Image (cartoon, rainbow over the protein chains, first blue to last red):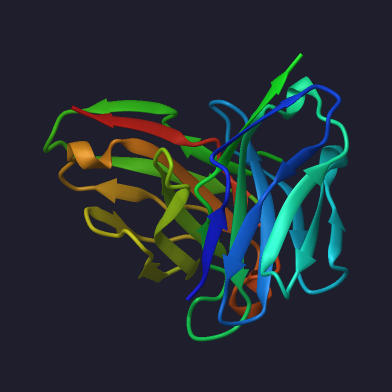
Length: 117
Length: 117
């Protein structure tokens, strides 16, 4: 079974300061991990994904995430927040082997990022 | 490219009414799925399909039916709506199944916001 825990339900930063959104996962098999972003009243957009290649993954809009197997973490970071980054962010795990769970996405509870001027 | 199209965008139902949420994709994707999004719970898988004629249950299937007669369409049916089905529904698709699917991006529609009174 797979699961995802996003450690903060809300994160508030000032524009221009770093962003850190934390995610821990649990998976019986080698996972694929994703971060999606959802702006208010919009659908979900993929920010980045990890699929067992480089552990530091770069995504769109300056975001990146590092896969740390020893810590079972996949935290999302950005060096400098922009007002347009205000949204809800979801950490997602997808198992790549085992049973019939191929491709089933398990979502974290979401982290709402607020960016202050 | 239209991508994944969901209709309607908004719907209000009375308890006991039935309706169908439509989902269509024009990317020739094999895999399609339905999720519901509730506050603080992320997205939860309702039903999914790995190809025309093949469907299976996800995490929260009760009260919902699906069918997949064509590659393009994957409608979600509520046979007798209940207030507990008030939610935002997302359809997603991906171009592969099996072990490869886990590593690939799933594309989401813009969502259908459903209220059951």
